[in-house]
Length: 94
Length: 320
Image (cartoon, rainbow over all chains, first blue to last red; front, side):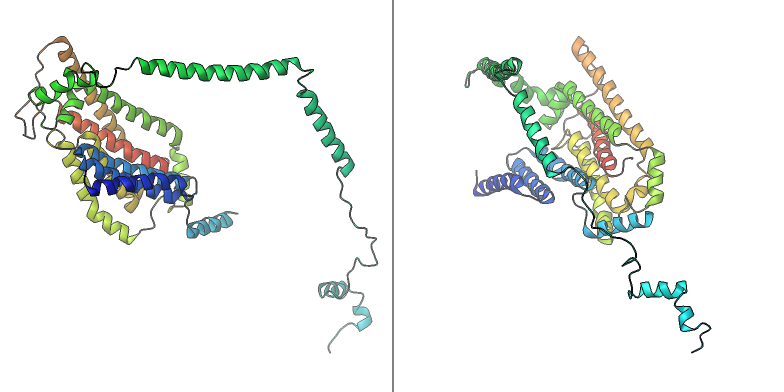
């Protein structure tokens, strides 16, 4: 194992710890995304390109997108402008 | 001064009183209506204290284990049962572990002939250069069929939970037509216009080359699903529905699953009964080779791409 692999492994551990300690849900999803990306690089180093492709597509891509959509659905990442818009619409409806 | 009324007459009119009240010169209620400070009507502090005392007394009487024998028994019984349950669980797990083969034994299942046969005869028997693909789609095609079914059932459950009626969807769209559409982000649209074709072609390449190189149905399908999601988030559901609507989704998904089932069952039947199947293996390394792996890869890829896109669309909008 080269120095590069050790570096990536250390990054994985830092990511895994900081996901659980981050208070912002959006931040933890982004960290999880980077975890998956580094994991796919490690799979490629370990000579399993099948897993690397799957990890990059599913772990870093689709799972995070689904998490984002879920956060959007529970109104956890509404931006201020959107909140204002919604409030204005509610007022109009009233 | 062009007044019609004299000052004295004007003082009796409603307008005079109204403007006097409006300017705050005189409060009409002051010295006219009897006013008292209001009292808070509700339970007094004494009754509240009494309620609290009664509550405490009741709790004490209920949890009085010296007189309440049933409670005393059930408390002890619960604790004993919890401890017993934990001990039994630990025992079951330990006994299961003790039945596992010892580490380093040459007769372990991990070192038996199966893996050797996969590596040595895999190329000859399946015709796939990629051993992993050849293994999971021929020797273990039945497992992969189960996984594909799991994907199908997962999307069905998400549809049952999150799918909205067409009427509700239309009403929402009329009410706020930009709710699920993007805000026409120019950067996102240009990037998507460049990236989407590349992503789709890469996904198709990964699916079709599953038996020659790394990849296969699942990875390729996931890449194509990601491309669809990018397209939707850039251009909106209306432009996606021109080529991928609910009808296309249903047809693609069910056809893929049924095709896999048909090809797979032919393969299992002939293999299980020792009959020679008539699927040509071809020359290893060519694109049209390795028997059932290529069509099954296409089926799995379609299924996975549909699943990923359906998850996104159902979460985001409640319909495809």
